[in-house]
Each structure stands twice: as C-alpha cells, then as structure tokens.
Image (tube, rainbow, N blue to C red):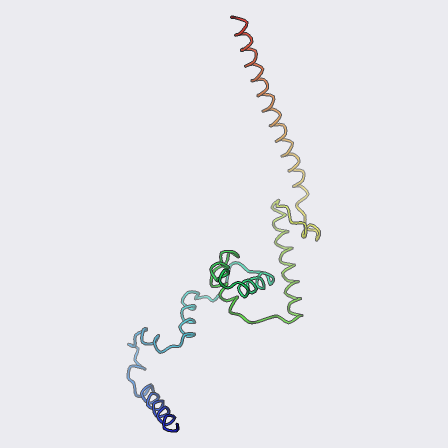
Length: 195
C-alpha cells in the first residue's frame, strides 16, 4: 500500500518537474497556440474566457426580473426539471438562456431585511413604470390605480370625444344603409307595378 503511494508521489513530482515554466521554452514563448493553452485550462477557466469573449463589457441584461419571478424560476426548475429546462424558462420569461443559467446557478438568498428592501424597490419601480405608461394613455391595473397611478385627466376627455365620434359615424353609416335599402325597396315596388 505504501508502494502505490510512493509511485503516485513520484509521478506527481515528475509531472511538476516537466511542467515548470523554466524548463519549458514554449511556456514563455508568445508563439504558444491558444488551443494548447485551452487544453491546460480547467473547465471554469474556459467558461470564464468564453463569457468574457461573449460579454466584453460585462453582464448587463436588458430585462430585469423581479424577486418573485426569480423565486418562481428556481421553483419551477426544481420541481419539474425535465419540463422547465433552461431554454423553456428562457422562452416563458422572455429572457436569454444565459440569464436563466445564472439565476439557476446562484445560491444567494437575501436576509429578511434585504428581502423587504428588494420588495420595496420593486414596488417603487412598478409604480414608476405604470406612471410612465399612464402618461401615454394606457390604463394601469387596479393594483396601481389603488396606489394613485391614473391616466392624464385629459385622456378621459379625449376618450369621451373619440367614443362620441365613433357613435356619430356608426349612426351615419346606419342612416346611409337604411336609405340604400329604402331606395332598393322602392325600385323593386316600381318594377313590380310596371308588370
């Protein structure tokens, strides 16, 4: 048993001796190919290099998900991993597969104070988003209307005038159609009287 340990340590010493940069002229050389460097790297180093190449300015996703959505993603993947794969979750939540991969990989969980702070920030963000949408004339959901987010008061006047115009147009179309039917009916009666 001690012999196998000795041979292992001898093999390790031989590998260390052959892999030292001073003995190998190609280790210091700028001519070393990227593929030979990749072979010597570990998996996490390869992935880090690939992500650096893919995101040179760092990871900056365009769409941010709420804490509730993050918890939902983790729960769906944990309960139904065959159904809710990374690609399926990316399609469902309309984010990149890389974002889902990072969400599932992370093990950080907020403390109760951090969680409360996050919920307050997302509430303020939601209110701000719906205030902007309400300014454009989009009706906010009831949750935000209760919080005081409402459309521009001028919107209601515009909406009333638009519905009035629509009603008038519809009445005019009905009047024209009735006149057309009456004219057609008179022609038919004149035609039958002529026989």
